[in-house]
Image (cartoon, rainbow over all chains, first blue to last red; front, side, top):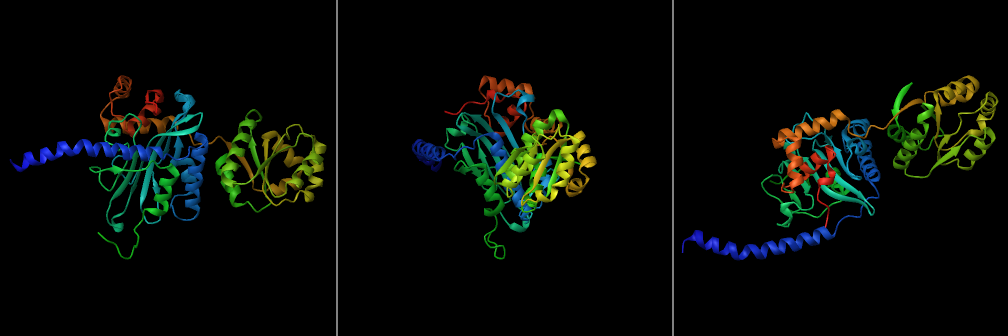
Amino acid sequence: MSSGSFFWAREISLRPQIESRQRRLQERLLDAIPTPHANVKKCLSDIRRLLITACDEGVLMNTKLDVIRGLLKHSDEPRQMNRPGTVAIVGGEKNFHRDLEKAHFRRNDDAWFDFVITVREGEEGVELVAYNFEIRFPDSCGPPPFIRFDLNPPGHPNEEHGVRSHVHPGTDNYSMPSPVFDPIEILDLFLSGLAPRNPEKRRR
Amino acid sequence: MQAITAVELAYRIAIQRETGDWIALITSADRSEIATGEILNALGEAVEDQVTIVDASRGTRTLTHQLLQIRENVAVVTGMSNWTVEQWQQLDGVRSRLTRKAPTVLVISEIVAANLEINAPNFASWVGGNFWTWIPNTDSLSVEETERRLDTLRTWAGKSDAEIIALAERGDVALGPQYVEWLVLLGKGDLIAPSN
């Protein structure tokens, strides 16, 4: 038996077991969804307050006016005739190419981030439909170059593989399961948690 | 006079929380209800403690009485549109009794602001540089901002709006967060699958 066919044989016996466990893990993670915000306005206002406090305290280099007038926005439901309650909350410009020229939130160590959250307002509050939060680190921070938290919407094919909610640890090529965070919890990480543990003693 | 949104004003007030500053937020008469609603919401967000709305339509004495009962609360005063010259003069006369320990926002029209400055000049000097013209909140994406985001999405995916809508309607598109945003910006949020 060639080594190739040996690995193939192992793969087909392992894969169903692993995928089944991955889906159970996902169920566990999705069961622990955050307490919903009361409505979209409250969700937006909680996010704004956190970001403005971070500006006031010098954690973010942006100004309050940057946050209020430029960076934090939501899609306009009535004008765009969305079904009631489906709203995109955006923080910073859309930025697929990690272009520093596009408007973003900038931390005092030059890490920078943007995000988009899609929520649906229902009778029991705001349901998280999808999100995408990416923080990028300057070279001086060492690896990883970025970390991205994605929540895909219900029915996305990667739900089958147990990674509807996942994190990209510095590369788009790899992802791993992640809990579903309240947007505020991810921003907490961006504002204080995700930084080198010891800036004087960086590990590679 | 500078223009300001309710959210910007509320965060300014949050910094002045311990002062007894008087602030005039000037709006057109037909939009004062919207302005009042926005400033109340915004203060609720920025100040994080009790904000009281005070109806001044019954005149100076009632206003003074109400404001003194809530000396430590941020107050939003409305209902001054029908005040007479005498009522403004009374307010000017009792201004020293209006010393408070929290900011007070008067939501007034341009005509009322003019009456205030003419008939209550001493009170107006208390307000000083805190006359602001209200403009609506700017937290909705403008048409241009929405179009810019849509354009970025179209370039990234190499697809048109019509193609994305068709794919979503057929239910055979892998809708990642970017596609979901795309549909919402197009006003097609109803095509996003409901949660189980």
